[in-house]
Length: 513
Ligand code: AHR
Image (cartoon, rainbow, N blue to C red; front, side, top):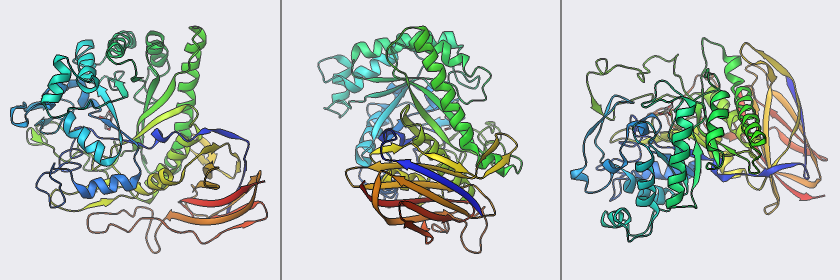
């Protein structure tokens, strides 16, 4: 049995829960759009071709904001191709994913879907093959009320009201040599500054995200943020981070400690942004947009065809299957800890988008003409999005540790917590990263009284199965949340026993002491 003690205090808070950290991502990649959120002719499709089964799961997931239309895709995309009469839209080659893009789905279709899903739009502009002009024209098309060529064109194309898009990404992963139109930090910093400036001249109310490092392992990490923010500090509000984790070469201990890397990545970007602030004598802070994160088996799972050549795919196709990772129990526990890391840094991480929403490394899966279902990683996201309310509590944690090859030693128990004064509820999100032993956790609730457990659930290895268990199109419920029996409040201390390899949520009703 492992042990951990956690102390929370009503007066020690980090800040309000930023709802935008429960974001997702829809890219024109593989089957995320086509046969994912959009499949005219599917038995569950509505009159617009939106899959209502996927829409319902998106709502249940509790997604607040969705980044669109890419990703690597956006760096070769002309937004104009996706508006106007559908039968007049051009078919194009998408070099990023070796795919034929029909453009049957574009900005209007996405805005209609976002409205039905009740999510905010986060629009990315192309700073790979396009630049300042296309960026400011897109803002005018999307946000200007009317009376100009572009805003009247939007009306003619069916949207009399502006889309009112507030959040904009200035390009995608521009530090990556794989990116179409890849740039040096100075080249990117300058074009981002000028594009952002021109976009704000059209609509001063927008918020802008500068493209940061594609991951913490990039050789330019740190230097990239410093140079880019040196150019863009006055214009942008956020800098982006991207990170994907996987179990490599059987090193499950390091995989389970992925959130240690996420913590370090976040803290490194905060330090760099604040150093630019100090050097430039700026008063505002640049906050973080972790706008791509997830588990993604980029190197180790067979059948991953993301890097497949056009020949290997047998030519150019519309919406081929790409990186449709099937997630198991271990992946769900890691995703739970990544959510803990994002929440613990909620004073500076203002936006986060799990990549992606459907089919492509996604919590939701769907089959063409067939069902839609929840993957294992759906559950920690859905539970945290529903229950993390009010203020983020600062935790004082003391846990048994375990060794990892990549990240040194790490806490066995990983946690985050929130306190919502309005409902009088605390939500505790607890992971046991121990593979073989259960963990006894004692949480001292300072500044609260009359604590009572309202509910407790856990995701863990199902009875008689192993940690590689997944859901699939024939088994939708093998991995999910179950009641956590072993939890009680004793005086001012909550005690819970977490099964080996698990992620749990405990809701506690309290009064102020
Ligand atoms: O989410 C899949 C891809 O990962 C995105 O297109 C890209 O931005 C990242 O490298």
